[in-house]
Length: 123
Image (tube, rainbow, N blue to C red; front, side):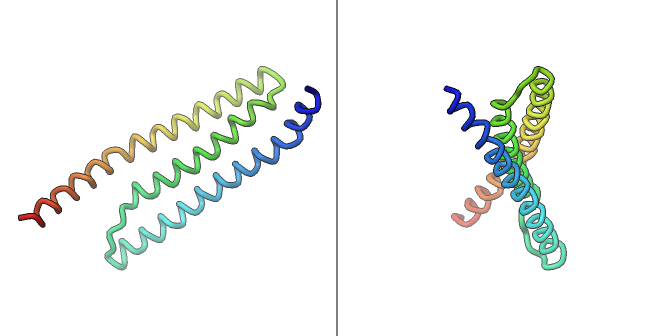
């Protein structure tokens, strides 16, 4: 059992770092893509759904960051660390829920608009 515990303590920090880096990359990529779509909407008169696209990217980045925090729970040594980690997970979960809540009305509006356009084509 000690060998497995040592293996987990050796490998887990690297896995946590990988998930953190992926989360950071996804958030940065989503921000850059959102800025590019904003630029196109403003100056090239395109019609990208900026809020939904950006929110989806941010939510995905937060999911990777939360995965890293969940893995970090295996390495906890004291109750103070557990409290701090619990607070971080709670904040990230609340942010994720807020983003998903924010996406909901935009998705419904988009779906209703598509249904209206389809109904007009049938007429």
